[in-house]
Length: 194
Length: 194
DNA sequence: ACTACAATGTGAGCGGCGCTCACATTAGCG
DNA sequence: CGCTAATGTGAGCGCCGCTCACATTGTAGT
Image (tube, rainbow over all chains, first blue to last red; front, top):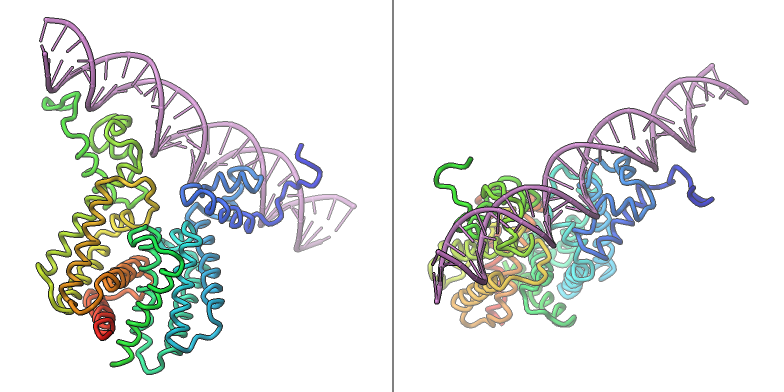
């Protein structure tokens, strides 16, 4: 009944589900991401994804994991090896821009309560966290990175979320960068002084 | 079937829905907040809430609005009229503690995309925003409140969210306060210097 | 090559949900 | 008292998450 190239076994349904989920997320937001819709897009029966993901949460965790990896890439792309406050600030700008570019994905990564986390996901999260801590330490060797890195992460993360929600006045691209840069440098110089 | 005091007309179903929603939110998180569950808890048919709220989003907006008001109260309770960095920091601590005390409500207020916002909700949000801006200006009269207030809000908001998601090492109560206090004071002193 | 077996996909189905509509009941007002 | 608008009901549609018995296929062991 299906065309000639169709096989009963899909081949790599596991990965296809994640791709389809990312598409649905971008098109229709978090509510559009249903296992049934994923199955439809993958050209497979509604029950098939359950062979690869225990439940919706599991799929979401997998999607979030690729989100963290993409975030890490974009942070690295902002500056290969930041070592000054200005360069660190540009990484912060990249963080916020990621959130604005992929709002649904960003909300999925951080906005939902994540009980019984996927291993893959916690690893990807930890990678981002460690990376931030590392570059903060490099940019401010005289500061206490253990204390400074979470503060900077929080600042940038909060800016991202408040912008996403429109709680801050909708800014142009340059304003976002300015705000992030100014805030980070303020925090940095203060801590460095101690 | 219902007791003698039962009336066909509920009396104040609109408000009862919000109360029921808050209960459900605390008990079972965001996914437990369904219009049908609200109706059940209010002792009313599943279609009844639609007389008062156009859709689920509308109810959520109403719930979020009371969340913002409660947040504003807790900020005010932390210090009636803060005028020093330390007092401002205690307000920030209250912000984070609100998020940790009511995680589901906090996520509902900020975590979901809020298209076509309720008037009541935007007003309540603006009230919080303005209040923060006001006390920042009072605590740091020599700083540019226009620029400083959003940075502080973002910092505190980010700390709240990252703690909620467990992205930061789970801290004891005192550690939260310490972290918030240190971060705020760092930012403040830096900006005040300009 | 044949045969078990494990992996993977199917189809039907259960309960829950958001939402709508025709209809019943009630409150408020002339 | 009677009219109208407000409010609640019941049934129902389509979608969803999830489960289960069953069909199909890749693969490993002989």
